[in-house]
Length: 202
Image (tube, helix red, strand yellow):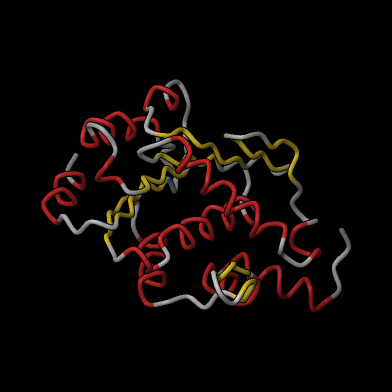
């Protein structure tokens, strides 16, 4: 796709800064206000900061802090502005991780064309989306077995405190992570500092 000079500037700036991309181009659906521009809150900014600076972390927050939104923004950003990055979403139930894929797709389809058409979707089914830059996002529910024999650049553990045998799952996942710039992180609506510390050491 041919960019105007302004579009090229915006595309490069978005690729360099997840927060800029989120605040300027991501739209979310509010239950009473409908479609609206995202404005990152403090928790979401902290998640992005930790994602940028740490290879593994676990965070908890209240239910209305926007955990699903910030996770979706990060994975969409990776898929649009990187190459050969494979991401996996693990949640207590498959429908929960599938829902996160749906949120990502809604964000993608609401992007301006100069961003969405620069990286096209080449495959989409209930549990997987693949882009033409060889990035992909896969929903696996709570099954570690669906991650085996694969390598991942990003693994997200959504509501990780409810994933069965989560400490064993983290130990299984870590060898599957690509060594360069790989990220493993979990977000939870239950504050359990002991569990977070245990997983950090797994």
